[in-house]
Length: 79
Image 1 (cartoon, rainbow, N blue to C red):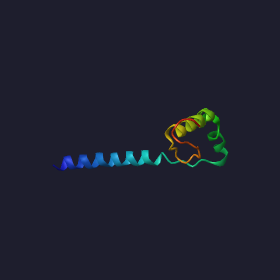
Image 2: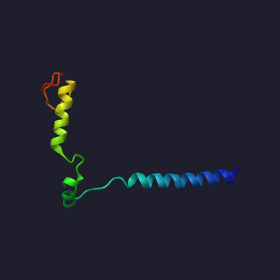
Image 3: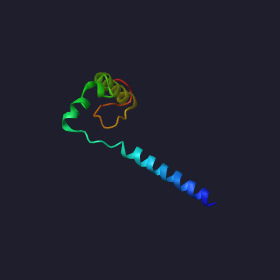
Image 4: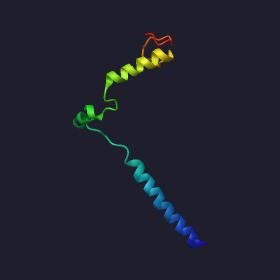
C-alpha cells in the first residue's frame, strides 16, 4: 500500500511540474523593438479589410441587427 501511495505522489509531483511549466510558458513580454514584426500585414487575421466591411454591411442590412458597427439597416436588404 505504501509503495502505491509513494508512486502516486511521485507521478503527481511530475504532473504538477509539467502543468506549471506549460502554463508559465504562455506568458511573454514583447519589447518595443519586437512589436514592429507583430504589426505587419501578415500577422493580421483579416487579409482583405474591404471584403470584411462589405460582409458587415450585407449582414447588417439583411438582418437589421448588426452589433454596434453603425450600419443602417431595416432588414429588407435594400440599403
